[in-house]
Amino acid sequence: MPAPEVSADALAARLSAIGLTTRVQEHTRHTSIEAEVPETLPAETWREVLEVVAQADRFGLLATSLGGRTLWAAVSKTVPATGDVRGPGHQR
Image (cartoon, rainbow, N blue to C red):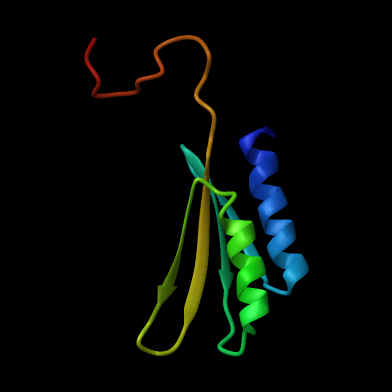
């Protein structure tokens, strides 16, 4: 399995190849990929898009009442192999 950063970049590249314009954003625990989805996206293209985002740890679609649709996917970052990996607020 590739590193999470490579996975997020690969997902964004595949969505771009389908014809969607993507935005990749780094966060503390994950990398997010977003793309605006046109209203006229054919069913066959939707199947391709779903195959791509299914590789992410989480994904979804935000739809607004104004007709905008934003596809999102999140790839979790790996946890360090040593040290206290439970983070703040977790007692031993």
